[in-house]
Every structure is written in structure tokens, then in C-alpha cells.
Amino acid sequence: MNLSKLGQLLSGGSGIEQLMDDLGHALAASGSSPHMLGGGNPAHIPEMEKIWAGRMKEITDDPATLRRTLAIYDPPRGNPGVLEALASLLKSEYGWPVGPENIAVTPGGQTAFFFLFNLFGGRRPDGTPGKILFPLMPEYIGYANQALEPDMFTSLRPAIERTGSHSFKYHLDFSRLNPGPEVAAMCVSRPTNPSGNLIPDAEMQRLAEIAAQRGIPLIIDNAYGWPFPGIVFGDAKPIWTERTVHVMSLSKFGLPGTRTAFVVGPPEVAAAISSMMAVTGLANGNFGQAIAGPLIESGEVLRLSRDVIRPYYQRKRDAALEAVAEFFPDSLPYALHRSEGAMFLWIWIENSRRSSRELYETLKTRGVLVVPGEYFFFGEPSDEWRHRHECLRVSFAMGEDDVRAGLKIIGEEIAR
Ligand SMILES: Cc1ncc(COP(=O)(O)O)c(C=O)c1O
Image (tube, rainbow, N blue to C red; front, side, top):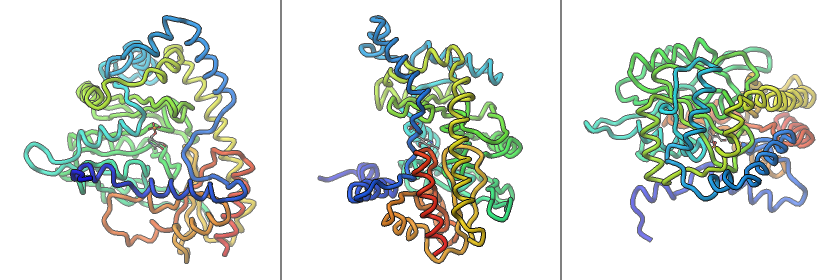
């Protein structure tokens, strides 16, 4: 099969794909059931599952809604009623000056980022290269292979603050953040996957000012943030400016199977995303919007995020932190990133003799599946920074017993 260059790029696989494959094989090969602390799947929260079942019944019980959901193409931009409802919610809750013209639906956040990165990044009409800058590494692994042109991504290391004997926090390093004309957009996830960092309001404000000065968009990935699912443990607020482009996904709200996300930004950006959607997919799937639409309209999404989802993950986070305190001897050279949101512990084993990849391999043989940290550092050609090879991402979304058992083994392995 003779593939085009682009074909080779898109079908050539990625580090994370290999890793997921490896995890799958490990799972199949392991006799006992392994402790799956690697994935990003949201937890199955009983109260939310009841709501999905109820909404499905309401949809199937009403022939008109069923027909609209199953048998009619939505416009490429999304269901007009749902766009209107989300705009009203963002206006009333945060005071953002947005209408349906600011919003476009995509099949999940992953597709939204693919569209956005390639909308802004890559060769420009005048022939100059446009880059996407990730100003705070480590960042979400899923971005790493999305560029349609080589060298489209660039990134900056963080400043590291030691916040305790076993804790630290990443900060934007403004002393090095000085995007040149080649930077076409910047992107952060907030809270951040993998570190659980929540970029403070003041840093966000400064980042937005830099974007405004340079006249470039600031893309903000709210996969774990506002307005849903609101898995935020720290104290901060979402930010809106004329140059921010938010991506809000229904996945971590509990509906990853519906593949639904919203891009909320300047009207030109929403229109461009809607056009890209028409070209690549004609229209979006209707199910996610049909299920969540009434919850967005009534504001129930906010209540569920605040009263059900966040406390659920916070309990899991607290249990995971307790397990670390119990199983990691104080003398171990480990540090956890301050857990301010999302569903992961980010463990730094400073000056570790084994790389995180080696540690991952050993943990796998002991039935504990995590993600080695190096995958979350991309956009920087140099591999020399030790820190890249000293971190592990551990999900705490799974069953508490699994998380405890897994962390006990991780503690033993770090101690070795
Ligand atoms: C930070 C972040 N952004 C985006 C995504 C993409 O999610 P989805 O395509 O399901 O919306 C994920 C998924 O895990 C994520 O963790």
C-alpha cells in the first residue's frame, strides 16, 4: 500500500497507541486481575448512571425526541437549542458575553484539538511556519501526535516550586515565556492532565495578556474543569477574553461514549470549527446533546458537577493520598504534585536510578498499570532533562481497593 506522507503520519501510530496496546496485552496475559491505574476513563458514578438511564428513557418514550435524536442530521455546528442553552448558562453563571455564534460542537475534545491545532498551526499563507506553544509541560499526551505538519509544536518547561517535603507544584515560567511571531496559538489544560495542576488565576491572567499582546488565541482545555465536570479541588475561576478558546467536553462528566464536546470562542473560530466538522463528518452525533441538553438548559449540569462529581473524585483523591502516606516511607525520595483537580496523582521520583519507563515495566510485571511520565513531555527536541524520566501518572478514578493495592506496590518499587 503506497501511502501519502500525510497518510503515513496519520496512520503511523503514536507512543500512546503503543502503550495502550501494551497495556491491553498485559491485561490479557495477566492471570490475576491487574490494578488498572493507567487509563483516563472517568469513574462510573452510580448517581450519574441513574441520570443517564432516566434521560435515555425520556428520549425513547417520546417519539418526536427519539426521531430527532436518531433520524435527523443536526447542523454541523450542533443542535441550535443546545447551543442556545450552553450560551445562556455561560452568560448567567460566569457573565461571559457569548451567544450560539460563539459555540460549535465536535465529536469529543480530542477532535476539537485536532481541528484547533491545525486551524492555527502549520505553514501560513505567507510561507512562514505557525507553531502551537504549550507553555507548561507536562501536558496531555493526546495532543502529542495531532499536528499535520512536522515541528508544529513547541513547549516550555515549568518552574518547580517545592511546597513540602513530599510535594511540589508547577508554575508557568514567565521568565522564559516570550512567544515570537512563529507562535500562532498557545494551549493549556486546566486542571492539567497529567499533573493535577490548576494554573492560578493570576498566571492565567498574565498568559491571556501575553496572548492579547501577540494577537494569538489562548486555547484552554476544560476536560476536567468548568463548567462540567468541575473536578477542581483548588480555588480558581474560569477566564474569558476575546482571545480565549475553551473546549468543554461531556466525557469526564460521565459520557465519553457519546463523543461530545463544545468549542467556545470568538465567532470566527466557532464558524471555522463548524466548517471543519461539515467537511470531515457532515454533522455530529446527536446522542450526547440529546442526553445533556435539558441538563444544560436547567443548570442541572452545574449542580451535578458541584454536588456529585467533584465530591466523588475528591473522596477518591483523599483516599489515594492517605494510601501514599501509609505505604510510601517518609525516607523515600518521592514528591507528589499538589492535587488541585482532575483524576491523577503525579509522582516524581527525583534522581531515580530507574527511568519511569523501566519502573513502568517492572510495575507491569507486578500487575500494576500506570503511565510513564515521559509521554507527557513533547514539543521540545532535547531529551536531556532528567525530570522527564522521573514521573509516573497514577489514576485514582478506579475502585478504591485497586488504587490502594496499586499504590502499595508502587511504594515498594520506589523503595527498591
Ligand atoms: C486533558 C484532556 N483533554 C482532552 C481529552 C479528550 O477527551 P474527549 O475526546 O473524550 O473529550 C482528554 C481525555 O482524556 C483529556 O484528558
